[in-house]
Length: 480
Image (cartoon, rainbow, N blue to C red; front, side):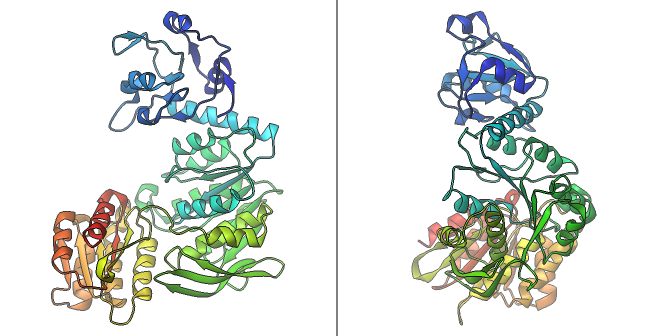
């Protein structure tokens, strides 16, 4: 974070600075400078950090103010003033705000504005129904080779995670990569107003979270928020292969850079070859530049994420050799995202159970089918794709039929929310026991443990809420 006085922080948060007598005796004053990390998790607070007490769905961060102070917090942001914590006088300053989440946004807006005014900061915003986190990781790997880069950890892309990332900026930060997710209209606009992108990337518009959005048209309108406020000097990086994304070109005043597999895309890939070791392709950039890429991230679908990252980096002036070198250093999309876990007797587990949508589920199944060696048995362990609303049964049914059409030899469906996958597969394939439904991950593990053959290739795929990512780890450990 920037060096800011307590008064400056309180002003940015649009709150009231409170320094108790105990805090004053401890040496705190309105002009004391604070520059620690800002976080809403008291377990991550260290000496000199800022703890923001946020009310959540299941807990209230105000219960952990004492723990944050004990851990070394220099400032607490709260929605009501504290005189004592855990029976002791509060010895650090506090800023009292009406709403901690809104205050975080105000704080992020101020910090981004200051860094922009004092340096050469460029902001990249990334959104889409699938691929945001992978694209963010790839772009971070590229940009950090040429300048100080701040990007979110994990999938920090909402009204809390995004500003927490923005608050990590320093006066010398050159690039901010902001992953911008949403569960409803207006949320991307809110994030953009904290840090308006110089480059806005839109990956896909699909059925991920369609239940929350209320339908694909609302999803489209929400993702379009990424490009609407871009200015003529900015650049919209758009997926030419997705008709909904391509249509956004009419909604923006910015320059447009197309990426995709189409010959008409300015940034494209050719000669794609997906194997169990990764995916090789030839990267083409504008002005006739091209280079071969040995991309270790598993799955042909991640080539599109690599193209998006390369496009944004190109707009920011990164040379093609630097882009390729960075892409070739990345070995996985993210923890639990197409993560290849090897084991004894040639057993391979692909753990892709952090997120799932109809598009990403189809891509993972296609990868499983494509990379299997002749004679290698394939197993898909599938859980629920959450947040599909009225599309849920239809989309799970489609996935079950896809399993059969891809000739995947064994299917284990886990959990009631995914039962339609099992029913569809049985109907499509008339299998004799190769498709099995179980209620729990423990049952799935027992089935796999009882019948794992040397050389098996196993995919574990579900939404995060289904909890199968731990099943993938468990299967890999059992075979290591």
